[in-house]
Length: 270
DNA sequence: TGCCAGGCCGAAA
DNA sequence: TTTCGGCATGGC
Image (tube, rainbow, N blue to C red; front, top):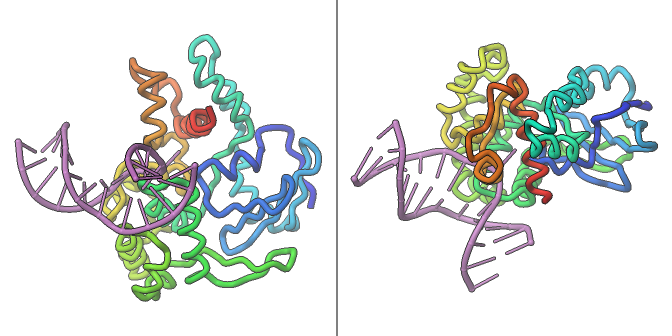
């Protein structure tokens, strides 16, 4: 199907934004996106026209929500005043096209546990190995194979050698413990997603290997609480250099997480 | 080669 | 409550 979007949708920006780790560029302005057990191929034709490998039913069922098409990112950007906050204004301008994906919570949880203290290429590699070892083999719209993100039972079923193959280092027991919690029903992510943000954060922080930063990322990129503001090594640098007097969280609520993402990409790029 | 990476844990102070 | 060493491994 064809999709027309005026503004604020740049798959190339989203692919490298550090919120998703499985997007794969397979051609000029063409990406393969596995999510929710499906796989979308998206290609940009003109500046505002995209060709999608799915039909409208699948788009409405999965991808519209995944891309967060219900939010107006142009309006979110326009809340920033150039004179009041020049740095964030420039970050928003440069990052026009970034969106906060509404991703599978389980996948986001495991991905960000894996992400700690590692750079993005290394994170992608580990996740890809995990998917190959424990995910289901399927075919995309062009007939090429891909692997789904493994569910908690599949992760639990991995033996020690297989886990070691993922090169997770000390993080391997973290994902095994998380998988056990979810597979046993002790942690029900479906039920949790109906709770308040405070309750969700408290539960996430109780998991082994989940601290403030990882919890914030899962809140923002998985539970889609757009006001959560993950502070990693990059954002620490931003806060130190651009906001020595403190960051105005209240002014930018309830979209602190969106602005954080603009700043993250902008600062990494410059 | 050495430093850094979308940090967290556990012990010590 | 805050501080700090240790941690597995890969990317650059």
